[in-house]
Image 1 (cartoon, rainbow, N blue to C red):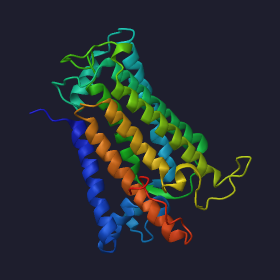
Image 2 (cartoon, rainbow, N blue to C red):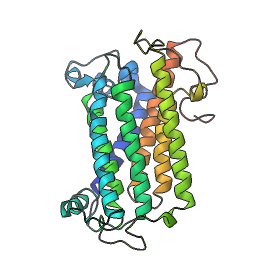
Image 3 (cartoon, rainbow, N blue to C red):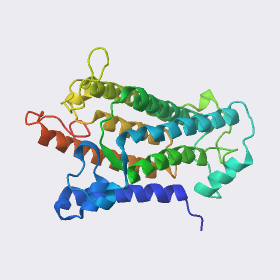
Image 4 (cartoon, one colour):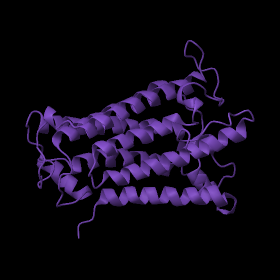
Length: 306
């Protein structure tokens, strides 16, 4: 029986984050310090430290490293798609073998070439946006993260790009049924349009939220004046504590809509949803404990819901 490595890895990460989240949220005080310290990072990191886990921590600003990888990897994937579906250039045989290895040997396409191209473009601009934000916009403190968080960043972006290609039409799959292997304007449908609009809106709002966070630590000239955390306001921050995390989830949901019928992307979306939700809740609870005047009407993750 063929086993999809991508399904397994994303299912494992999603399952792990859900189980650990439940444990941290309900019985954190009864858990070993090593588990709590591994799970928590940044401003809501654990005050208690385990000497062995300390050796497995790296600076939080290392986040920017896997966005270098993501930008390069997404560019490679987008170029492959354009060459295959627009210019009809045969892709190297090793690409097919690689996709067989990480997905399934007998892969069938789940969407057409036009959808593949649009979604790969979405991933391309998101990866490059995050590259820009982490290298030229974000202000990192001296906090640390567990090396597992660092490794997951690489795994995530590697898996996302590979997953899109794994179910794309020929030449990426050998069993293409009822899906064209070239880019056609006529293949643009209402689902693709709706998904793309949602993606672009979330894309913009996430950038605005990150700019808002940066402005809390800089003066009018852009010079860093503090590393202290303050209460962000304006835009989606007036509705939820973590609009940047909410928008991240929305973008992956938008891709889910565009890739409707995909066998792998649901696993990716559930992983992103569970991960971003837990991060948002931890941030929200931290704000509430840190600031007595924190807005009570503000939700954590999803406006008016959660």
